[in-house]
Image (tube, rainbow, N blue to C red; front, side, top):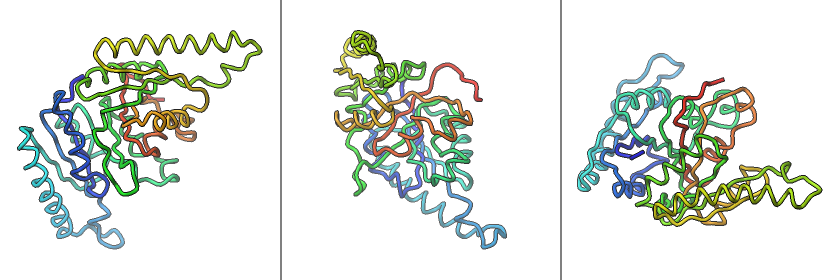
Amino acid sequence: MKIKKLLFVTKFEDLCYNSLNSLLDLTKASLEHVVFLNVIEKEKVAMHRGAGYIKEEEVKLKETANIRFIDWAENLFELGLEVGAHINVGSLIPEILKTIETEKPDLIVIGRSHKGPLEQLYSRSDVTELIRRISIPVLVFKHMNEDNIVPDKPFRKPLLATNWSDSSINAAEYINDLKELIDEVNVMYVTNEKQLKSKSTHKVQKIRKQERAKLDELCDTFEDNGIKTRAHVYVGDPEKEIIKAAKEYQASMIVLGSSSRTSIIERWMGSITRTIADKSIYPCLLIPSNKKEASK
């Protein structure tokens, strides 16, 4: 799938122009159009005790955002990109969904969730809610250092964590379409420790070799497309092992398949994808399945 139009959702404090600028390598692939979205939370323009809202504050916040977007747009125009902008008062996810319906982007860029742990427990994180509602790839952008230095060229060295699901397979295809931006891909699979509990060393090695063979086959598809690739089999808790691999191989981002399924168990226990996207320091590219999944 080609990324021709990008929707950049920003609150300014977590995603600034430098963040957007680091993604402009996408023009080497197919990027033609960038759309900005700033959602002004109702609480910022509300009067005390909920008695309506202050119109002057709304106008001030909208104009402030508009001035920043105009400045950003001038830089993008010089690169030959089309630019659009939406500045709305409302709730984040509904406003993103409305903009998606209007603009039909190929990739959504959003910052990490700002909801607290307790709020996420009962209402889902922004990331979880968004991927539940759409079938478009989402890039959860992060500053990888405490001083807010933006990661340089986040598509340069992705780590693809696969579990052989439909969305993981789709993620591999997605990476292949971005070959102009990639120096190397590290592909990994995490084996559950329970699978390796056996008195027979032969059985344990057989499982490892089976998974490695599948990874090698996947790597061949990247190599055939001119992308340098390395395969890795890890053992243990997937969340911890994926973060460990990202550190060991100095990944520029983590690529994961995402699921729209939102069972009660997922809400209480948390999915691997959601946890890594919300809590890791790495930018996370979440790729949905091409197939429709029924929510539970």
